[in-house]
Amino acid sequence: MKNWKLDGRIALLRVDFNVPLEGGVIRDNTRIVRSLETIRYLTGKGARLVIFSHLGRPLKSLLPDGSLDTARFSLKPIAEELSRLLGTRVDFASDCGGPDTLARLQLLPPGGVLLLENTRFQPEEEKGNPEFARRLSSLGEFFVNDAFGAAHREHATTATIARFFDTDHKAFGFLMQEEVDNALRVLKNPEKPCTAILGGAKVSDKIGLINNLIQFCDTILIGGGMAYTFLRAQGYETGASLCESDKLELAISLLDRAQMAGVELMLPSDGVIAPSPEEGDHCKITAGPEVPAGSMGLDIGPRTLERYADKIRNSKTLLWNGPMGVFERQAFSSGTRGVAEAIAEATERGAYSLVGGGDSVAAIHQFGLAGRVSFVSTGGGAMLEMLEGRELPGIAAILH
Ligand code: AMP
Image 1 (spheres, rainbow, N blue to C red):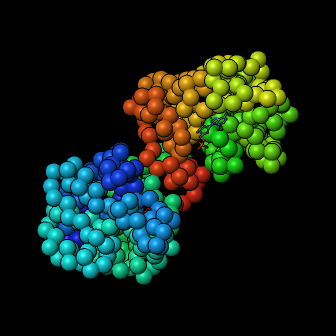
Image 2 (cartoon, rainbow, N blue to C red):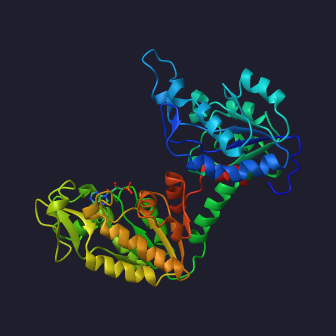
Image 3 (cartoon, rainbow, N blue to C red):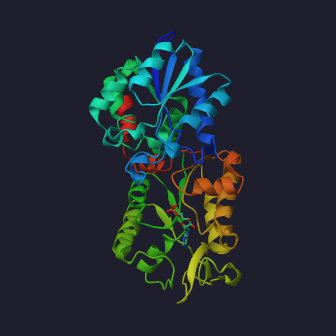
């Protein structure tokens, strides 16, 4: 992107403008704001910029007569917000690569921006249809992908389209490049000791992640609901805690694999329990890892937090994915908050920290600590798949 001559040329930019919209009002414009750097860079070099994005799942929410709910899923309000943020007019095409796009493209001046209608109004998008991708690719000379949050999808505008450009005419946008660079910083030769903190509801969502982390982490700290599957597999009573009883053998094999690889996989040694997540007033701290019948383990306990925080403070690379408990409720948020604070402290003392791929991103924002870690990913599912060591279709299509 850096050495492209863009003056007066048409550049296509795929972004992730999948923002929360209610009645045409944007509830959170973070994703639009995060794309401004790439947009300003391209228009600043004189590109005639065509932007496209998906929004929601319009084909899964058709109106009773089978037509598209354009009032709910149109990108028109986003064009207005983008225009406001850029301080220049952003033109909007009521289709994605159709006659309105072509007509407006004719009138687009150098440095001008044209936003196309929701890519997912086209059934070809989610099918990764090559003909649709080819048609869109023919609109411009360059293709930039800044939609990291959709990079794990093999869709027409997230991956397929890039295959119609040679490597000199396609690139990552700044946001996507930053996400990829940060993931690689953890995945490729992380500074040691490297510690992963994993939580969240289910082990089954994190199997690929744990398998990959075992290859390069020194320590894996486990919390959240998923810890109880490991504890049950080790023979502990876990009461009414979340437990995937069909994953007990898998939990044992992950523990064995970690041990063989010399990775210390740590489990909670105490917990905060209550009859249910709604009954925070009745919470208690257990003496050991066991949860009595009729109770649920809903957070790691203070001794576990102390052990985990100690490991975190002595690490040089930290990866955090998933909360330590039901952090949305005050009574069960101490473990997650404590881990977040330890990560922030370690970062201030020179460690590198990446928070990504799950509810830990929401947690770090909730605790107001997002500015005190090295990087907070914007791409939930995409970051999780990268950390699992998978090559994402949207990334591969730009690199090869
Ligand atoms: P995930 O999407 O897998 O990262 O899971 C996040 C969700 O897991 C959050 O909504 C937490 O409230 C929930 N969670 C974390 N720990 C527990 C637990 N011990 N029991 C029940 N739910 C939990």
